[in-house]
Each structure stands twice: as C-alpha cells, then as structure tokens.
Image 1: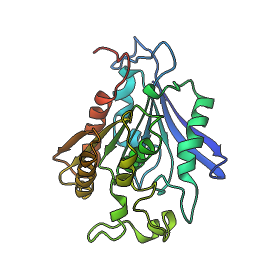
Image 2: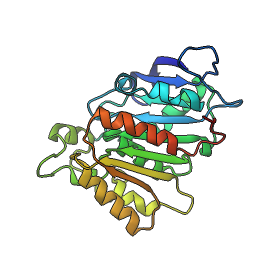
Image 3: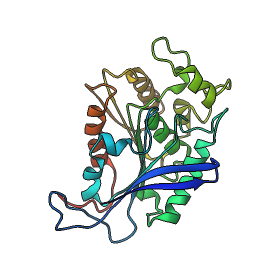
Image 4: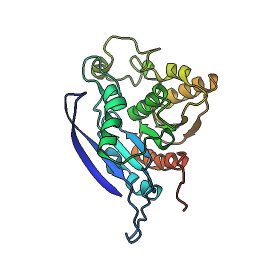
Length: 261
C-alpha cells in the first residue's frame, strides 16, 4: 500500500485542510503483507471519522491499512472537525466540501474509479451518520454505505435525556433550525430510498449509548421496505469494536473482482 497525508487548500472551506489516503499497490516480496491492485482504476472507500477525531484516527486506532492491502481498494479519510458532515449554520460548509469538493479533488490528485459500482462510504459514530446521509442524499454515487455505531437519529439527540449533543456543537452545526424532516435527518432520508438505492449496512454494539438510535433507524428502514444488513451484537462505543467491525464491512462491500484468499 501507499500511505499519504495530503495537506491541501479547500476553496469551499476557505482554508487549508488534510486527508489521509491509502492507495493500493501490488506487491509480492513484502514480508508479512501481500498487496493487490486492480488492472484499471481502483475502487474507493470514503472512510469518515467521529466527533472527537480527525483524518488520521482510523490508521492510529485500527489496522485498516493492513485489512485493505489484499483488496486493491483505495481509502480516502477526510478531515471535517465536529461538523456532523453538515453545512454548519454558524460555521463552515463541510457538507459541500464532503459531497462536492472532496471527490473532485481526489479525482484530480489520484487515479480512482469514477464508477458508482466502485464507490463506497463508511464511518463510525458521527461518521456513520455522515456515511448514511451522504449515500441517501446521493444514491447515484454509491454502491454501498456502512455505519458503525452511527448517530443515525440525530434529530432526537438535541434534547436526549442522558446523552444529548453538546449544546455548543449543536449551535454551531444546526443553530435553531429544525433538523427533523430535513436533509440532515437520516430517518427522514429513508423516504428517498428507491429501487436502485445503495446497499446499507448498520452495526452497533448492544452496550453502546447510540444503540437505541440504531434500533429506531433500522425499524424505520424496515417499515419503509428499505433493505439493509444489520449487525447488533455485544460491544461498546470503542475502538476494539470498530477495529473488528471494519473488517466485517470490508468483507461485505460488493467489490467487483475481489481478490481470492
């Protein structure tokens, strides 16, 4: 694999930002790791971070680089601060950055597949919410989207009795505008799911403080006839769980010409 931290200027954000990128490399003599790469442009997974983290966190807390090496899969991990992947009401335009500028910059910088069937998104916690929101708002772009411990019912989190979103974060991101029923409400976005929608994967530990949100989201999806793969199993909101589950996500992705082994 080739690993790089890319510092670049965002016209949308009006500032310099960063992304961490893994690019596939075919190797045969590297001890302990066999790398694969497709003959053409590689498929890409956009992998999103949580509320308290940044673009480096997946590499620092999991072995995702090792897990993707035999798959010939590129991984793009952007930096979006505490934005909930939204155009902030009192901050910056992170949704526009994520959904419009980031893919364009990545395709300018790297050789990546532009095909929908080769494009995926996943994330944890706030990033799980971002992944599902992105896929449901732009279903024509993604073959699959996965949420690990996602904040999938964020509209209920403002006044949650035990684990509300920090009021300062909420004010910055959403201000006083309603979230329920908008493009930032992943439950409401399920109404947009069509017959050619992306495959959806939802995993959450049963001891996780976001477990109820995930149960509600899955219930709402099933009420609407939205197909999805669900993994509710023992686990908490921690990296031991996410390191294990990202391997399950990678196995689940509908990669074309998946290398054997």
